[in-house]
Structures are given as structure tokens and as C-alpha cells.
Image 1 (cartoon, rainbow, N blue to C red):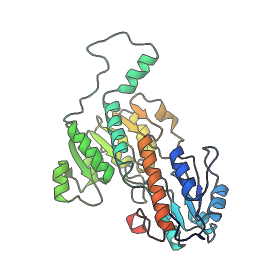
Image 2: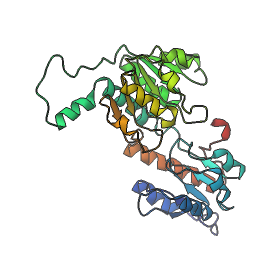
Image 3: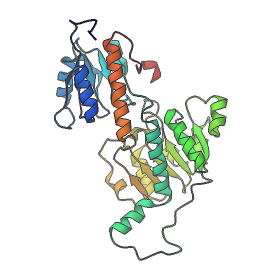
Length: 333
């Protein structure tokens, strides 16, 4: 097959982090691609240089692209094809004003993140890390009728904060475990979706929080969700309640959560994301009733490969002069 545009240059694509090997290899076949040698995070200066010298930038959640960086990007950059679904690290509005399109990879992480949400709910309520620590330290003295007592998941009320794709996938899993599903969302789901999920809608987040046994945060980080679970709202929770977050750390006031967990005002927490990236409150790390994971929610071999495929399709569609299928528009944010 001969190309219809034999003279057309391949797009110059800059990738900011190491991606799975099959994804990098396919990108090399299709584009004039600059890959990373090591998996270190690009500095601000390196990101600006990459934007200035490329038609397409492929960043990840660790690359913060703000208005002043976009102002220095020059005229060559036309597409930011994000490797990941969340785009809260990119100033999408400014990018669009400067004629730069932004695409993401929605839907790919849904099932994997929902699996991890259930894993955290089980880990906290059944005290798995405490048991693990005891075994690893060689402290186990044998079975006893009263030791390691956790709580039964079935019959508990789960309050899902954010009922998008991932929230709904969590609801499906939770129902199978016998949990009662409740949710708060910007918009109420259609009646038939609500029926299918057997989910109860709460217009008032405060009212929902005060009645739940488990809270799962599945909302994106936007200006309106920053510290949505602030100190006042966390105080509404029952002292037996558990909080799980697999979305974005900024949705919870981490210091307030830490204080309440230390004081025994909340029974436990399972966190895969943190308010200040990988800088975690050291007092949070010491608590036995808290499960901390290093942002692993979407970390499956299959998920990362699918993410890469979506990025490639977005770039290829753009290269062919069409609208990328996963275009992010400011009204979606």
C-alpha cells in the first residue's frame, strides 16, 4: 500500500515518561517519536522544550501543564494526547484558547480501578494489613476466637461519591458482595440505570455521609470537588465508618482525615491517592487501620496497553485530519 501523501512528514511526538514496550514500539512505527531513556519525571524546562519541538505531547498525571507553560509552547504544538483518563494536571481551557487540542483515555481504567476499590474496602474492613504485618514479623501465636475480628461487608451501606463510569462499576461489585448502594453525584442517574444498579440517590451529600458505613470517593479532581470531604463533612461520618479513595487525593482534606483517624473518630481508611502526590503525611503512615497504596488503581498490564492504544488512535486520527475520538472539551470538566 502506498501512502496517499508520500511527501507528508510523520508527526513529531514527545513522550514524557517510559510507556509499556509494545506501546513505545508501535509509536516508533507510526510517528517520529522522542522516547524517554529513563523513567524520571521531566522538569518544567524539559516539558516546555518538548512542547516547543513537537506536534504532539504525550504526558501523564505526573506532568503539570499550566497556563504559563502553554504560553511558552510556541506554535508547533497542536495536540496534547494524555496517557490516562484524568486531565486535572492540564490547563485544558488555556490549551484550547491557544488552539491546542487535548485528548485522554477514558473507560480503560474503569474495571481495574473498581477492582482496587473493592480490594481496599475488604482490606480495611477485614484488617488484612494488620494480619499481614503480624505474619511478616513472625508474631502470630495461632488461631483464637477473638483475634483479628473485622466486620462483615455484606449488609453494609456503601456511599459512592461520584457516579461516573468507575462509580457505577464499584456499585455493581458492591451489590454482588451484598452491600446496600447509595450515591451522591452532580446529576442524578436515569431511573433505569438507578434500578439496574439498585442505587439510592442522595441530593444532600451531608445527609448521605452521616448514614453510611463505607464511603468510596470516585469523583474527579475539579475546582468544585477540591476538599469536598473537608473537616466539617468528615465529622458527619459515623465513628464506625471507613473511607476509601481511588480517584484523586485532593478531594479529601488529608490532614483532617489523619487527625480523625488518630482520634478514633473514623474507623479506617484505604487510600490509593494522596493530596500532595507521593508526599504522604507521616502520621497517616503509622496508623494500623489505614491501608496505603502507591496509586496502583489502574496499574494492570492490560489497562496500560489499552491506554497506549487509545493514545495512538487519538494521535493517528488527528494526523489524518479528523477529530480525536477522546477529545476533552472544557464543558466536560
